[in-house]
Image (tube, rainbow, N blue to C red; front, side, top):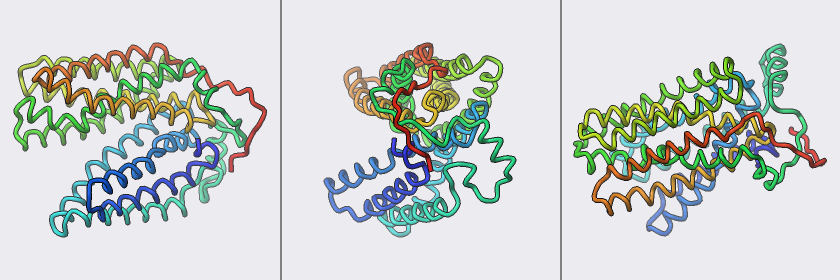
Length: 359
């Protein structure tokens, strides 16, 4: 909501400053309690990143190009995850585990200086951009220079937002499986060696990047030929549905090669379908895309929280890692089904008279 009020530039600067400070402070911790407090505050500081990224895309790109633009938001996170070990591991080996946190904190502050000097909330504010291009973007942009203040109760009355939030709750089960549990699943559940696990994990995230690209292109193509409602729905249902099918097959397969291929394909499908949910936030939220994205993202984080607890508990109870994986597949099927209740054409209806100007 803060990004909707004061603009994403100011929020990004505040987010990354806080993120950088608490990243650097992590290198100074001397106990478990201080570590938990600092990492908690770190998470609070960075929580507005995705909502404001979507707000930026909705201000700079028309509906017909939102899918491709959002795919690069997802790709950026994948590239960052791939590059981080190249920086962190050599520093940790050479200078100890604390130094990488200091270096990464400095990198964040360098990014802040670039954002402050270069980035703008609207194309009209960007120096050096041709006036014709500015006018073209403005004519196709969802935003106006004035916006209504939208209360939370009005947002939660939107009939599309509830299935959207529940869908995102479901799809984050797969996301957090890939991030947190898949290495454990491969080694302890499937008997992969450490090198084998690393190879599968590396390939999985490389393929995930192609999934983001494919999903963005396919989503914009489907929007053009099937319309906004069916274009968004088909992209989301196809991605989550195929992800669920492949996880289901992996959970029942006794062949490790087939399992690895299914997991890699499942991450491709997840990447294909996940970013369209953010496009829907921009479709229904318009000037309040950041607020709508924040609500959806909260439910997604709750999904990741439940997965973190349930996956391990179910593995302990059943003495198998396959049953919790099959559960994740079923949750993904539920998420795909929820797309039938998501209608991106149902925008927030604002009745309040109070307005604010967007700087």
